[in-house]
Length: 458
Ligand code: ACM
Ligand code: ZN
Image 1 (tube, helix red, strand yellow):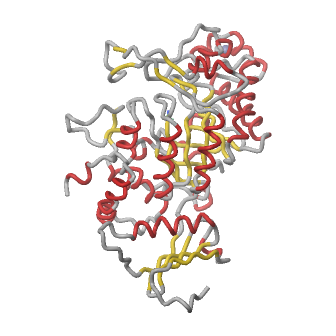
Image 2: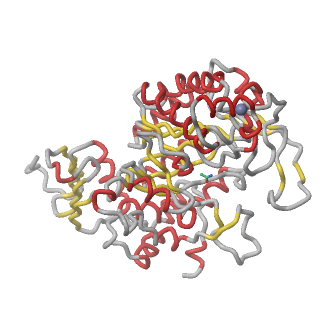
């Protein structure tokens, strides 16, 4: 690999090494008299070396690189960023941009939340009404859903990704070493699907695609065989589109009111000897897990899937706090930490300014994201190995445009990137903010509409 014939220091040399100490995503980056040398044992490692090189390039017109010797690999293998495209639909072109930026910051898992009460966004050829009915709502609430009386905009909203578009996005992501994990919500957050196929609900409807935000009682009926048949058919079309190990099955926020009143749900509980509706939800998830496992995939679900008993091979996404993740790891299940308090990017970045755009609530400034440690202290080293990593979630109720999504995501997702990649010891918030400043030109050049709260104080 020695390039004796060239004495110039403006060359960039890439090499794949057998050095497995770098891990599947690590790299070595050296800048010296002989130019730039990036080595890794995988393509992903080389890719991350290049991203670090970009970070070294000064934003001034004079190009010159500091001499460095970096030996780097990630702390966690799941470095996730989520996007809810159910509450608001964003075109595939924006999804690609979203993936571009996250990949630069070494985030490697895009959690694509594809089905919601307010819209079903993935084409399922066997069920055309998902495209005709479930993908659109007649109007959208204006202002905060907590504010009464509700006012609506009178404008139809919606859309869906064709399977061709999904394949294109997944391939685009793979080129950037990003895995796309699809989420098909069950048994809750199902109103859009029920509007299209009312037989999937306990009462048979009629149902309407939701036009406001919240948690709704209209969920998939856990008693009817036809519900499972529908969801299995959906899984049959979803699995070939996504090479990811995991399919996210949701599992959060499923009110049990209708199940309590539904003769078929109650009959199912009796025949399956389930003592309450939580066990019925557990039966539902376990049954779908079995099916998804039979297709060669694993399931991951929100931490409510612990209630009534965890499905045998399920991974847990801990969102209501860290407790669900801790309990799951203690039961030897894999975990991704996404607690609201640190990692919900739909929360406010500023609670004092009158000009801050409407958000769902909460307060998660950049410093809060940066301060997060995904490894809870009470886990034993053996249990801690089940923490696959961490992820920030981006629920789009109050993000009607892609510009607003970017405003909420950046720069907080860059803080997440450091939480997920860097060792705990190497973190330093002041230094991070300095480096963040250096990233503004890059973000500007990509036309990312990042928020500027942390810069205003400088
Ligand atoms: C969630 O935020 N409902 C997972
Ligand atoms: Zn039912």
